[in-house]
Length: 339
Ligand code: NAD
Ligand code: TYD
Image (cartoon, rainbow, N blue to C red; front, side, top):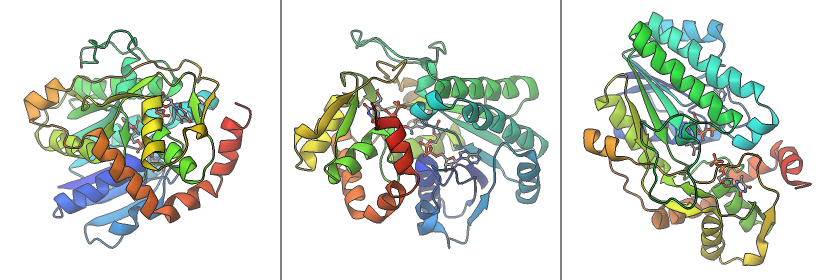
């Protein structure tokens, strides 16, 4: 199979590229990535010389770049990760989220139709379902839960999902959609909760918890997500949506305390800061459909995954130190300086 992977220089896309080249070395992987602030060639360094890997730098919203690439590569499948992915940045600057997440997805699907791609997989998020109340632990997101978004990020992802499903119904493009809960693991950009807390704790600087820290996220180790997408790509049915999650719900404060404890740091580092506007309370996935129809199950529990993740950040200081010493500093000052 020849697969165009968009956003492969980012967190989940990068892990997916590594996973695919190791699990299916016969497949050709063409990574299409613009290398925004979130894209990092160092994430792809371990596979750069793989004979079945090619990297192309381009904007997914730029038809003049995307169509010639599809014409040249004639891909069998597209796995679409490329996105603006951070809720806090979407609150500051929503416009780029619309361009990349909505228009970019549309351009990729137009190219997929023209060059008769056999599968277009849209990597989406559980955030399209909005949030669940904290006092109803019996409620979970299923594929039937209505879309009800809170942030410009989740709204742009929901728009892209609907556009993708419309291309299935209207044009017969063989689209699948996965909606996954929060991922964590190696190569996670340090603006997101878990890597931010690990890298701050390692530098003994404050750990900024939004609001009361009672918001709940459902954490999935990134390789389990990669395995789910691989399953959907090979055995999923066009037109279907699959929720992906592993029942690993934790409050943010529990997550931060676990990291502090594992690193042997003081809980005095934990600092409560102004809450995020529109902050979603709880995400929780019901993964029954993907489990029963495709036999996917998560393999890494949170306790094991967080240890693997912390270990990776300890062993790969160069990777994240280069990031936090660059333009990330300005971002951090802007977002946390006066919070
Ligand atoms: P990320 O921000 O780490 O990486 C995004 C990648 O996309 C980067 O390499 C960036 O350079 C690239 N990119 C951005 N704009 C582009 C453009 N216009 N053209 C080409 N490339 C562009 O994101 P991530 O956390 O790896 O998330 C990947 C996908 O998974 C996203 O679609 C996101 O919505 C979805 N998702 C993420 C999570 C999570 O917990 N991180 C959970 C569920 C779903
Ligand atoms: P994040 O990693 O941004 O993912 P998402 O908002 O897409 O779920 O945030 C995870 C949770 O952690 C969310 O409830 C917001 C919270 N959070 C903090 O408390 N402090 C922080 O510095 C960050 C980045 C997030």
